[in-house]
Image (tube, rainbow, N blue to C red; front, top):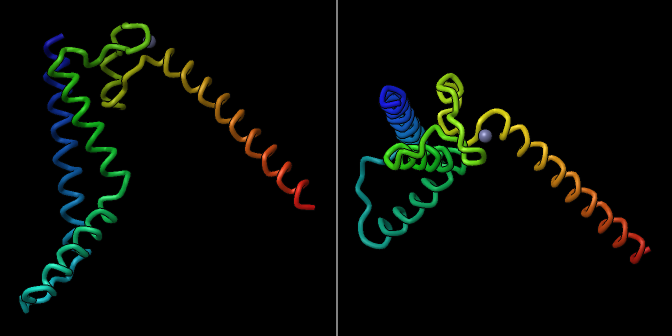
Length: 139
Ligand SMILES: [Zn+2]
């Protein structure tokens, strides 16, 4: 399975580069840096504001994506990549190409999603009951 690993490593590294480039691009368009170099406290303030901005710009989506990529690369290094974490069967290369972060085979993923949907439904019902209870108490 060496070919699969090398191919997926290439795909993941490309994806990481593309994500980083995307972040860089959004940073460049997001900050119209003035030519005048501010000094002292103003600069410190500006840079901490820039950090906050960067955090906002990066967003959960990009951070999550980078984390997923790094985790997948870690699994590649450990030789755990491309193996379903649930049933330990090989995940088909076709699925990995579409979903490079896939940790489960199609069958296990479907089971997990079904379970998650049930849990979510249960959680929602619980919230509705709590709202209903609160309204009853207030009224
Ligand atoms: Zn599985």
